[in-house]
Image (cartoon, rainbow, N blue to C red; front, side, top):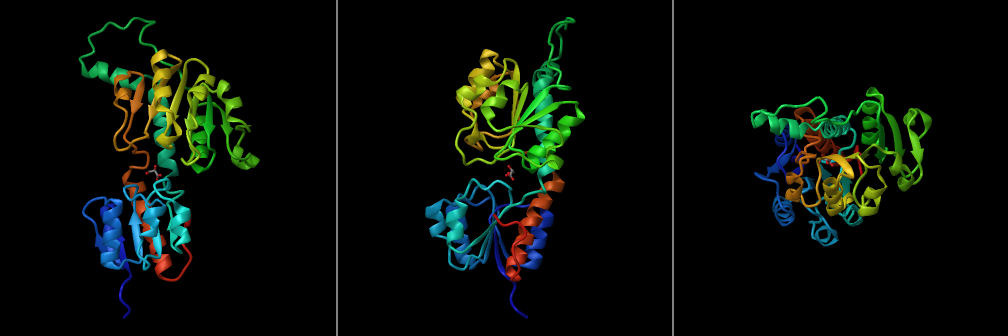
Length: 318
Ligand code: DGY
């Protein structure tokens, strides 16, 4: 019997995925999410052909050059792979995979939750209740913004952007989008295409980002200024897309009514000035963090490892 392929699980995964990894492969299971150096050292020590990694393993070109020659596949457990220089890794002859599709619904669900929470002042009401309520709320006081029927702008109309648009249609919203290219009508489903993001922004009562990082800062001070006064901003994509100083200023000045944020520039830290703003609803990069989705993400990463080890093409190559 041929020996099982050697795999490094460089991040903690769900129990079901860990059990499968231990059963189907000769797996070295890390007891924490490994750093880049730890992961490269462990892969070399275990003579791993496959590394299953998350964002704690940052493979820039220099780190990619240090990957052991026996590594054949780097299987990311996330759909985003901005923590690595995929071109540099692939130039080493190593397959890179990610986990598209399986987290689409959960990410759009959380983005819509942030949208509703921001519009309806969920954070402020929750704090008020936990402090004992105790204030008389006049008929015209403590009012929020009605999300139903508003105009939502989506930047990035890939799978997650389209799932966000589907949810918005259920709330009677008009959907605008900016994307690299216009979608065919069956995917567009009536959403209105803007070739230029700047041309779209003045029409967006709510704006939600659904594109990968890598193209620099998209939401600059100038971009926020193009949104109409009182707009709501939602980000479940990546913090690197946003000038956070400009966002904080826009929230403080009232140019933005509110924001719902799941992603930040310096994770797992974040700019704690956000926490001082009552009109921000914050979550710690957990859009995909449901039991079902995290199982599916880890299993897809292992499916990719199994395919490569069996001499088949990867299911979801980058
Ligand atoms: C992803 O998969 O890229 C999500 O942001 C979760 O990390």
